[in-house]
Length: 74
Image (cartoon, rainbow, N blue to C red; front, side, top):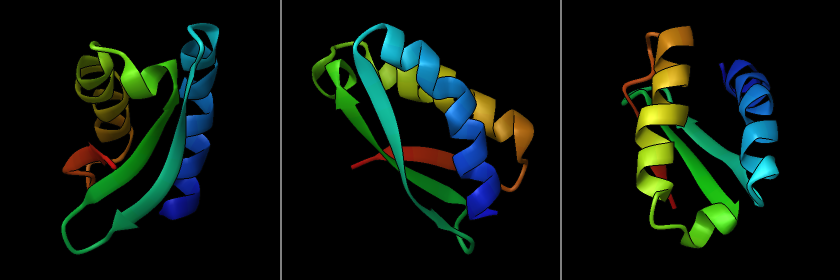
């Protein structure tokens, strides 16, 4: 599952990198279904980061993997 999540995030990264940001996969908790990521670059300090995380990255990952319940940043 972790490999699949990492591969899915690779598809999202170019969009974030185009705006000077990036996302790093940290962990997937199989018990809770929570994916943990680290937002980097411009995404780390952007006021829209929460919207990008929840309405962009989280929605994309949950659509691809129903066992994911949430995506959280550290």
